[in-house]
Image 1 (cartoon, helix red, strand yellow):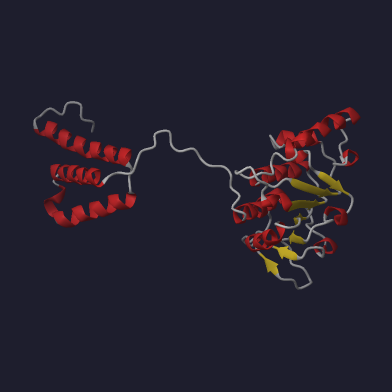
Image 2: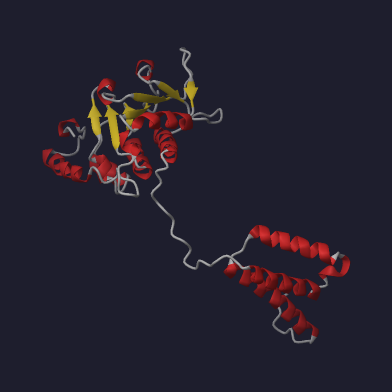
Length: 289
């Protein structure tokens, strides 16, 4: 990283020197769950003249979540790297890799495919694709060479001369109110790339009280308890018993409760029968109305 290119008005040379230590962790976010490099390490995010440091930080946060590591900024607003990491926590590795460029040519140097994102209609007729279609095209080439996704400034988007550098023009489908925040657009693009790459590395922990699937015997006990409970409240008095119980079976099979959930359902029906028995015997003193 060229430290002299960091545009920060609030930090002195000593702060910039300290920031250089961040680059020691620059490869930390570029691995998949197996420990090997992800194909997304060859995807470059390019922001052309971003005007708000908060959007730079939000872009870094999106990159960290989706497994992309290289951010190139073309003539960005002055920003403080420490402030960026303060907004996007635990992103030292990505912040340490940020490249500040003086031209779009510098930012796109070496890439073999560029997808430019725009929401505006252009005079020139160009084929427009969705982020999902663009992700397949980009990753088809990213296995062998760098590719880039390109975004414009917050107020004007990409100027025509910069969009001309894009091989593919991408528009995010929206309603007629096409007004996405810059970082939101980046997140959508990276999300589609992340899914296409089958790169998800985070797995959710199972429930703390996980239970095995219910057995056929447990289902039959549930149906017997349900039938007794329905008899106890005279539910079958004006209804056809066989049809009702067949519908009850279908309902519970569709719900597919596990053993623990099924035991709860049995307890409900059993308590219905016991409560009716207490009422019948005149011992329903604690029954709530």
